[in-house]
Each structure stands twice: as C-alpha cells, then as structure tokens.
Image (tube, rainbow, N blue to C red):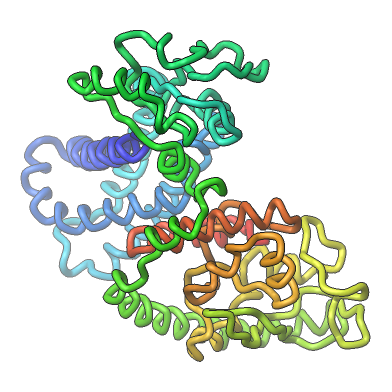
Length: 455
C-alpha cells in the first residue's frame, strides 16, 4: 500500500509538471505558440521532468511520513523547485543550439505553475485520498511487543495506509490502544474479516483462526506473518525472527553475483569521484583543521571488515586529541554520542557535511570497504556486541560501507539496545540489497549532505 501511494504521487507529479508546461506555453503565446514550440521542447523537458522527480526524492517529498506539518511540505517544494529551475536554465543555455525557441519565460512559468500544482496535488492527496480512500483495515492475531509497536505506528501515521480494526488476544491492551476492538480468541471474530490479517507466531497453529481465514479467501483477504509484515513496514528485521534457519533461508549470497560485480564498478567510480573532491578540498580542510585544534589532519583506526578481517580506516580528524596515544579517548574505547564534547568546532562542520569521510576513498579503492553497506565497527565493540548478540557477526558477510541503511535511520547507536536496532537495519539491507535500494540510499545520503544533517 505504501509503495502504491508513492507511485500514485509520482504519477500525479508528472501530470502536474506537464500541465505546468502546457499552461506556460499558452500564457506565453496562445494555442498557436503551443503547437509551434511543443515539438522542440517536449524532449528536453521530459528529461528535465525526470530530473525533477529525482530532486523531489532527494528532498524527501516521497517520504510520506515526513511531510507534516504542512510548512515542511511547502519548504521542501520551494527548495525542489528552485534547484530544478537552476538545472533547467543551465541545461537549456548549455544546449541552446539544439532547442527551439527562447525558454526564459517558459522556464519561469513552468517552474511556478508545475511546482505550485504539485504542492496543491499533495495537499489534496493528504486531505482526501491518503488517509481515507486508500486505507486498508488490519487485524493482528496476538499481542507482542512488535504488534504493539506496529499498532502505535499505524494509528499515528494513517498515511501509511492501514487502520487497525482489531486484535485477537486475551491480554489487556495498553491504555493508549484501548480504542482498538479486542477479540479474546479466534472464535469471536466476525465472519467478514479485515482486508489484512497479520499472524504472530503463537497463532500460526490456531485451527479456529485457520478456518476463519479459509472462509474469507473469496474476499481477497491478505494474510501475512508478523515477521514479514513488520519487516516490510518498519524496514528492519524483527529480533524474534532471527534464527539459524532464518539466515540460511534469507541470506543466500550466491544469488547476487551479477549485482556484486556491478556494485564493484560503482564503488570504484564513486571512489574516483570522491578522490577528485578530496584533492579539491584538501588544502582548505587541512588548514582549518590545524588552525582550530592541535593534532594530526587525518585520523586512523582499526575496524572490522568483511568476514571479520581487520583493516585501518582513514578519515579527517574531527575530535580533540585527549589521550597520550593521540586519540580522543582517556578511559578506553567509547561510542560517539549526540553533542559529544570531544568533537571540535570545525569537526562538527566536517561531520555534518560528511566531508570527514572523504579520505575513505582509499579504503574503497583497496577493496576494504564499499560505497554502501553496514558501517565498520571497532574490534573492541564487535567483541562486546557479539557476546550480547550471537548473530551480530552476520553483518560482516558483506563489505562495510561509507554510508548505509542503518545510518539513514538514526545518527548514533551508543547503547546495547541501539546497536541491536542497528543490527536489525543492517540485516534488512543485507537481505534486500539491490540496485533500487542502493539508489534510494544514495539519494537519501545526498539529502543528508545537502541538509548538513551528518552525524
């Protein structure tokens, strides 16, 4: 449902963009002008409209959970429209000889009208469609920590596309979920069920529930296991699902050999681009690092990589030198935290813009890291976390990455519970990694960099 809503938004945006172009042509010169200019403009504008969709994705306009309050929507749309207008102007004037007509007025009108219509489309979508027409009812079979988490999420974010209509369980629901209708057992369910039923492990062998589900087959009832629905909705693997059988079933690496070869080429091209940016920015970064704090320009540290092999990661130094060994630690290894006082003033800028990661192009070229993957941890932390989480080492099945799925969900993972959550995100990526997920991670990372929201 969530993906369907995103595709609906994209389709509506394309209609708004083309409508904006048509209205701009009519305003510019009437119907005759439209027929004369359309042929020369349709091809370059189509390419630019695809660029507009990418810009909207980067600015977060397709993340349905992050467009409230309405002020946020307006801000993101203005930014997207401004960036697109700049790219459109540069494109037309770089290739002016290949485009018919003078596009100055048309571009200005298209930007204003198209992105104005796209804004109105989102308001209409959110008000009339998202939380009302395109919503499925859902029943959970069994009260668990995961079902309660899902109920809270779906109740607070109707734009995801589900309304919780009931829960099967004798246990009492928390007070904030008391409005949800509760069925003590499967026999109490009505003959006509919800659109979707999510079954937790303790109900998988419930014969009464199986009969009810069977009698609702003709109503196109969708039945899902809790672990699958949780992963699809939360974008992470639930801890209760983890077992040796789960890993053998879901992490079949031999099926991704072609993808891995393409990824290797992508990694090398990305590393070369990083190297060029590194060369261009190094003088300024080096001077500012020396002027604002004492210590070396670069920071090197041993990390755990693929299959548990250790390597030395290199970054720009962003922390104060506090220890005798030149590190920022005086009481042994410790996780970085929000508002960490060890971070220097210029180091905060480097982290927010992710410039501190640039030197890792060398690790990527040495095949120690990838562009995308789980962030590499220090061996000391890996040992501690593996003792507490037996399956932690599975995240080392693939090369660690410069950016990753877990990093985009949360900035810092400084406690045991937070690192368990990080593992859930890492396993989700390892299981589902592919070209589309990688593209989404790259675009969202660009959004983080441009918004200076690095950690």
